[in-house]
Length: 273
Image: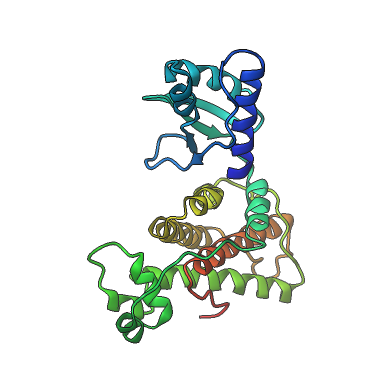
């Protein structure tokens, strides 16, 4: 379920509660669904109960409870909790690995709107365009000159290297005569990576450059760890199997997510490093 899908679901839920006389209010023209600022508060949060409470004078928690019961029964929603003073914290159903891969590929097909990052001329001259933009979303205290060094301690290098690695896997697989196909990955070793890929639409919806950069680092690091433990390509005389095609599809989705995030930050995503 995308943020837009969830927004429509919340608005439909409010409308149904009003039509059923569970709420005495005017149907809002729009509702806001946001990524919570802290972990442990669900996948999304909405303040719609607080807005209705302001208009009706009814306690926000009572309104939130009405909406919670209705939302909890909607397809794609696993759980709805109420947080003070009346926020609804929504947790979505966990998706299968193959579904996450398909959604990541579909969600990045058209690209996201670029974020507005404008490094100054001195920073551009010192670091170049890509490193200068990454420096604007780096934690305070990071040695900016580190961004020019191609090694693991450079977070920008790790992100771009992971992307180039996904592209190399696709090229090598084509040479072996097989293509990516989402499916059973064989074990749960990819679960951390899948969780980060599933987060991509939520992170991009927040439109927060620093948060996006940290997300890309987590995706890259999870991918590189998974790759080290779980080879994507057949070894030796081994024939390509369904699990190899599924792993290749996961690599393809990872590359698409990394490229999408880098592009939003105005940074190139080279196919080779």
